[in-house]
Amino acid sequence: MHKGFSEDRSSLITEIEQIVAQEKRKLGEYSSSLSDTFNHGRILGIDQTILRGNLEDVESAKASLDTLVDFVVNPDHEDFLVFNNAIKIAGYVLKRSVASRTYLLRHTPTLHGLPIVLDPTQNLLFSYKEHTVEYGRGGYILFQLPGQDPPLRYEDNPELKKAAQEMMHKLYGDVPGLKAFIFTSGLASANTFNDFMRFLSHSNGRRNYIGDNCWVEIKKGVVDANDPTFAAFDETDTDKIMELLRDDNVQSISLEGIQNYATLHATDLEAIFSEIKRMDFKRPKYMLIDHVVTFDTNLYERHFSDGMPRNFCLAAFISGIKFTQAGWDMSKSGFLFLRYDPENFDEVADPYARINDIRAMSGRVPSLEEAHLANIETSESIRSRMVRYDRNIEYLAKDLDARFRANGLGQVYSAWLPDHPDHETAMRNYGNGGRILYLKFGDHVTGEVLLNLYRHIADEAFKDNVPVMAASNFGFSSPHIHIVRHNVFGLSLRVSPGSTDMATTRLFAEYLPEKIDGYFKAHNLGRT
Image (cartoon, rainbow, N blue to C red; front, side, top):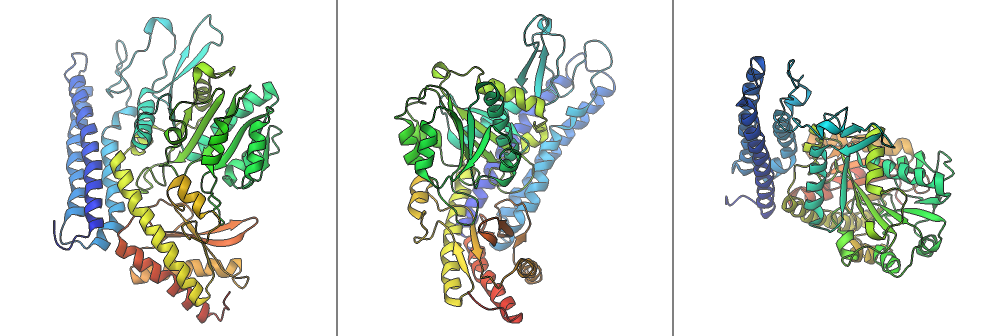
């Protein structure tokens, strides 16, 4: 290894090599299937020309993938350059690779005889004599079954199902009975689950409770919309959670692991699940965990290695764009995971089948292109990157806290800090203190002042060639800032260090308070 490479650079190279090797394997499988289709006697004329061109595209995509490896391995590139520009070239070559094996998805089938879809993954005939309509090019397979009630039956598209299951295994390994769905986003995952809860509540009269600080968009769709089947509650009150669990009229409870708002409350799932295992649920009880920033904690094996309690279903959703695509923002996606014991679950509708039906009808199904992009990482690359990420944010939280205290700039909120009220709970339950932190300033920093400060930091970073992304939505690859307004906490600046090298993290930790302090002095703003 070149002596200029840091240990971080070595881990990045390994991660990229694994991702590229996996993508090349998928290209090879696709190319092999495509060649079989090409050699099929019924592929004639212009279709042969199309297939030949697609085979050439696949080979070109393989060569393009090599440029990503070459970029991170090149000894003449500084670590700083590599970590903070890999996002650009990775997005290009990986999207190109996925495109090369999805070009034919929109191709019109042959115009004579039994229609043959040229894409080898879509050339399927399901139970040909048993149904009248096959819809295999969307997010689901729709069967219309004459003489049956109901007449419609939805099945997951095989390729979408494969992507969801592969991602599930990468995150959690082989967990018995764990089921997975892929959606257009994390929000779509949660909303579809809530649609299922609403469907059940209209027939059984039970209520669903969602934490006050769960995703604002989720709350807006149920609680704020005055849906009578949903109610909000203070999820920081563990006694209240226990009360809701024991109440047979409560159907579901929605919680967040380490909450994505400024005080970063950490839910003690260990204590909650310990109680659940001692409870006797007379009717099905559901719990939905917003698992976005704690996605790599295996709730299912860690807390329920002996199986699920009778009539208890644990659901968790994550947002693919932030973590499971290396933070490269290449596609919108979300995953929903379900685990329950079907032999000891007294529900009128099977949760997995019903959620699949609702997703099919809702339009929250991603394209196959998006699904492929959501499944680019390996289990090893995810774990390697998150180790680096957690090291970075722990350093950033403690360093910024010391600088802010010394200079009176404001307050740092992070569960990585030992004096945070939920530090011990976060570390014990999730092994980390959260993947973001918040900076809170005094009353002298109004909304207009904070907005101008935010723009000032972004403009200065651009001039100084310091990698700081400023955007409302973001992945977790490079340092990032974002303004957040909470209805109780007020305005704050949300900060993420990204999974970059340590040198970039140290630079960010120095640069951010320096620019804030300079802006305050230039505008005669006070201190806290």
